[in-house]
Image (cartoon, rainbow, N blue to C red; front, side):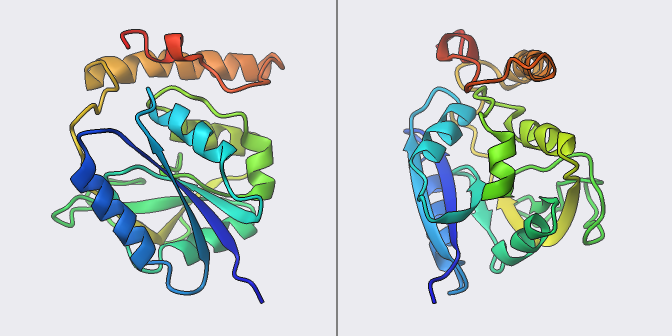
Length: 221
Protein backbone atom coordinates (compact mmCIF):
# COMPACT_ATOMS: atom_id res chain seq x y z
CA UNK A 1 0.00 0.00 0.00
CA UNK A 2 1.44 3.37 -1.02
CA UNK A 3 2.15 6.04 1.58
CA UNK A 4 0.15 9.29 1.66
CA UNK A 5 1.98 12.01 -0.28
CA UNK A 6 2.65 15.45 1.24
CA UNK A 7 3.87 18.12 -1.18
CA UNK A 8 6.22 20.44 0.75
CA UNK A 9 7.01 23.77 -0.96
CA UNK A 10 10.26 25.42 0.16
CA UNK A 11 11.10 28.91 -1.17
CA UNK A 12 14.74 30.01 -1.02
CA UNK A 13 16.95 32.73 -2.46
CA UNK A 14 20.64 33.04 -3.25
CA UNK A 15 22.61 33.95 -0.14
CA UNK A 16 20.67 31.67 2.22
CA UNK A 17 22.33 28.40 1.24
CA UNK A 18 23.21 27.36 4.82
CA UNK A 19 19.63 27.89 5.96
CA UNK A 20 18.28 26.00 2.97
CA UNK A 21 20.55 23.00 3.49
CA UNK A 22 19.51 22.70 7.15
CA UNK A 23 15.83 23.00 6.20
CA UNK A 24 16.01 20.54 3.31
CA UNK A 25 17.88 17.94 5.30
CA UNK A 26 15.55 18.23 8.29
CA UNK A 27 12.48 17.58 6.17
CA UNK A 28 14.18 14.54 4.65
CA UNK A 29 15.22 13.26 8.08
CA UNK A 30 11.77 13.78 9.63
CA UNK A 31 9.70 11.89 7.05
CA UNK A 32 9.63 8.99 9.48
CA UNK A 33 8.41 6.41 6.99
CA UNK A 34 4.74 7.32 7.52
CA UNK A 35 4.49 9.69 4.55
CA UNK A 36 6.08 10.24 1.18
CA UNK A 37 7.37 13.80 1.01
CA UNK A 38 7.30 15.51 -2.38
CA UNK A 39 9.86 18.27 -1.67
CA UNK A 40 9.54 21.16 -4.11
CA UNK A 41 12.28 23.80 -4.13
CA UNK A 42 11.44 27.24 -5.54
CA UNK A 43 14.41 29.56 -6.00
CA UNK A 44 14.69 33.32 -6.31
CA UNK A 45 11.06 34.32 -6.67
CA UNK A 46 10.26 37.96 -5.88
CA UNK A 47 8.10 37.03 -2.88
CA UNK A 48 7.32 34.04 -0.70
CA UNK A 49 3.74 33.93 -1.98
CA UNK A 50 4.91 33.82 -5.60
CA UNK A 51 7.20 30.90 -4.72
CA UNK A 52 4.36 29.04 -2.99
CA UNK A 53 2.12 29.48 -6.03
CA UNK A 54 4.86 28.32 -8.41
CA UNK A 55 5.56 25.29 -6.24
CA UNK A 56 1.89 24.46 -6.08
CA UNK A 57 1.80 24.42 -9.87
CA UNK A 58 4.55 21.74 -9.76
CA UNK A 59 3.12 19.66 -6.91
CA UNK A 60 2.57 15.95 -7.28
CA UNK A 61 -0.82 14.99 -8.67
CA UNK A 62 -0.78 12.22 -6.05
CA UNK A 63 -0.42 14.65 -3.16
CA UNK A 64 -3.11 14.28 -0.51
CA UNK A 65 -1.74 17.13 1.62
CA UNK A 66 0.18 20.36 1.01
CA UNK A 67 2.61 22.14 3.33
CA UNK A 68 3.93 25.66 2.70
CA UNK A 69 7.18 26.48 4.49
CA UNK A 70 10.39 28.50 4.08
CA UNK A 71 14.14 27.91 3.98
CA UNK A 72 14.82 29.16 7.54
CA UNK A 73 12.36 26.69 9.06
CA UNK A 74 13.51 23.43 10.67
CA UNK A 75 10.78 20.80 11.26
CA UNK A 76 10.86 18.68 14.40
CA UNK A 77 10.44 14.89 14.31
CA UNK A 78 6.79 13.87 14.05
CA UNK A 79 5.65 17.22 12.66
CA UNK A 80 3.35 15.83 9.99
CA UNK A 81 1.00 13.51 11.90
CA UNK A 82 -0.68 16.20 14.08
CA UNK A 83 -1.19 18.37 11.01
CA UNK A 84 -2.77 15.49 9.08
CA UNK A 85 -5.10 14.75 12.01
CA UNK A 86 -6.28 18.35 12.14
CA UNK A 87 -6.79 18.69 8.39
CA UNK A 88 -8.72 15.42 8.23
CA UNK A 89 -11.05 16.72 10.96
CA UNK A 90 -11.72 19.96 9.10
CA UNK A 91 -9.35 22.31 10.91
CA UNK A 92 -6.30 24.30 9.85
CA UNK A 93 -3.36 23.14 12.00
CA UNK A 94 -1.39 25.98 13.61
CA UNK A 95 2.23 25.21 14.47
CA UNK A 96 4.13 25.49 17.71
CA UNK A 97 7.20 27.49 16.68
CA UNK A 98 10.39 27.96 18.68
CA UNK A 99 13.34 30.34 18.42
CA UNK A 100 16.77 28.71 17.98
CA UNK A 101 17.27 28.95 21.76
CA UNK A 102 14.03 27.05 22.37
CA UNK A 103 11.91 30.05 23.34
CA UNK A 104 8.23 29.56 22.26
CA UNK A 105 7.22 32.11 19.62
CA UNK A 106 3.78 31.27 18.31
CA UNK A 107 0.08 31.75 19.03
CA UNK A 108 -1.79 32.05 21.28
CA UNK A 109 0.90 33.60 23.53
CA UNK A 110 4.59 34.21 22.90
CA UNK A 111 6.72 32.61 25.60
CA UNK A 112 4.20 29.89 26.41
CA UNK A 113 3.61 26.48 24.83
CA UNK A 114 -0.12 26.46 24.27
CA UNK A 115 -2.67 23.74 24.88
CA UNK A 116 -2.93 21.18 22.11
CA UNK A 117 -6.04 21.76 19.96
CA UNK A 118 -6.53 25.28 21.38
CA UNK A 119 -8.32 27.59 18.96
CA UNK A 120 -6.03 30.35 17.71
CA UNK A 121 -6.48 33.39 15.49
CA UNK A 122 -4.46 32.14 12.52
CA UNK A 123 -2.04 29.55 11.27
CA UNK A 124 1.52 30.05 10.08
CA UNK A 125 3.33 27.48 7.89
CA UNK A 126 0.04 26.41 6.28
CA UNK A 127 -0.86 22.73 5.99
CA UNK A 128 -4.02 21.68 4.15
CA UNK A 129 -5.64 18.67 2.58
CA UNK A 130 -6.29 18.66 -1.15
CA UNK A 131 -10.00 19.25 -0.53
CA UNK A 132 -9.21 22.27 1.65
CA UNK A 133 -6.70 23.63 -0.84
CA UNK A 134 -9.32 23.64 -3.59
CA UNK A 135 -11.35 26.14 -1.53
CA UNK A 136 -8.34 28.34 -0.71
CA UNK A 137 -6.63 28.80 -4.09
CA UNK A 138 -5.70 30.91 -5.94
CA UNK A 139 -3.02 32.14 -3.56
CA UNK A 140 -2.12 35.61 -2.40
CA UNK A 141 1.32 36.16 -3.91
CA UNK A 142 2.75 39.03 -1.85
CA UNK A 143 5.50 38.38 0.71
CA UNK A 144 3.90 38.63 4.14
CA UNK A 145 0.27 37.89 5.07
CA UNK A 146 0.33 34.82 2.85
CA UNK A 147 -0.30 32.54 5.85
CA UNK A 148 -3.03 34.91 7.07
CA UNK A 149 -4.58 34.29 3.66
CA UNK A 150 -4.92 30.57 4.35
CA UNK A 151 -6.50 31.34 7.71
CA UNK A 152 -8.93 33.86 6.22
CA UNK A 153 -9.98 31.62 3.34
CA UNK A 154 -10.30 28.63 5.64
CA UNK A 155 -12.44 30.51 8.15
CA UNK A 156 -14.91 31.32 5.37
CA UNK A 157 -15.34 27.56 4.92
CA UNK A 158 -15.77 26.99 8.65
CA UNK A 159 -12.25 25.62 9.13
CA UNK A 160 -10.94 27.11 12.36
CA UNK A 161 -7.23 27.31 13.17
CA UNK A 162 -6.22 24.95 15.99
CA UNK A 163 -2.83 24.74 17.66
CA UNK A 164 -1.15 21.35 17.33
CA UNK A 165 1.80 21.31 19.69
CA UNK A 166 3.37 18.37 17.87
CA UNK A 167 3.25 20.28 14.59
CA UNK A 168 6.44 21.99 15.69
CA UNK A 169 9.35 23.84 14.12
CA UNK A 170 12.37 25.99 14.86
CA UNK A 171 12.48 29.34 13.10
CA UNK A 172 16.04 30.50 12.45
CA UNK A 173 15.11 34.00 11.29
CA UNK A 174 17.34 34.34 8.20
CA UNK A 175 17.82 38.05 7.53
CA UNK A 176 19.06 38.11 3.93
CA UNK A 177 16.25 39.56 1.75
CA UNK A 178 13.75 39.18 4.61
CA UNK A 179 11.77 42.16 3.31
CA UNK A 180 11.94 41.00 -0.33
CA UNK A 181 13.48 44.24 -1.59
CA UNK A 182 12.04 46.53 1.08
CA UNK A 183 12.65 47.05 4.78
CA UNK A 184 10.88 44.39 6.83
CA UNK A 185 8.61 46.95 8.49
CA UNK A 186 7.80 48.66 5.21
CA UNK A 187 7.04 45.32 3.60
CA UNK A 188 4.73 44.30 6.44
CA UNK A 189 2.72 47.51 6.09
CA UNK A 190 2.61 47.30 2.31
CA UNK A 191 1.52 43.67 2.27
CA UNK A 192 -1.16 44.25 4.90
CA UNK A 193 -2.78 46.69 2.49
CA UNK A 194 -2.57 44.09 -0.30
CA UNK A 195 -4.12 41.50 2.01
CA UNK A 196 -7.03 43.78 2.83
CA UNK A 197 -7.55 44.56 -0.85
CA UNK A 198 -7.52 40.84 -1.66
CA UNK A 199 -10.22 40.24 0.97
CA UNK A 200 -12.39 42.86 -0.71
CA UNK A 201 -11.88 41.10 -4.04
CA UNK A 202 -12.99 37.80 -2.52
CA UNK A 203 -16.09 39.35 -0.98
CA UNK A 204 -16.95 40.97 -4.34
CA UNK A 205 -16.62 37.63 -6.15
CA UNK A 206 -13.57 38.82 -8.06
CA UNK A 207 -10.97 36.32 -6.80
CA UNK A 208 -10.17 34.23 -9.87
CA UNK A 209 -6.36 34.07 -10.22
CA UNK A 210 -3.19 34.49 -8.14
CA UNK A 211 -2.77 38.11 -7.10
CA UNK A 212 -1.05 40.57 -6.94
CA UNK A 213 1.07 40.56 -10.10
CA UNK A 214 4.86 40.88 -9.64
CA UNK A 215 5.04 44.62 -10.31
CA UNK A 216 2.56 45.25 -7.49
CA UNK A 217 3.82 42.52 -5.16
CA UNK A 218 7.37 43.86 -5.32
CA UNK A 219 7.17 47.52 -6.33
CA UNK A 220 10.86 48.20 -5.67
CA UNK A 221 12.04 45.06 -7.42
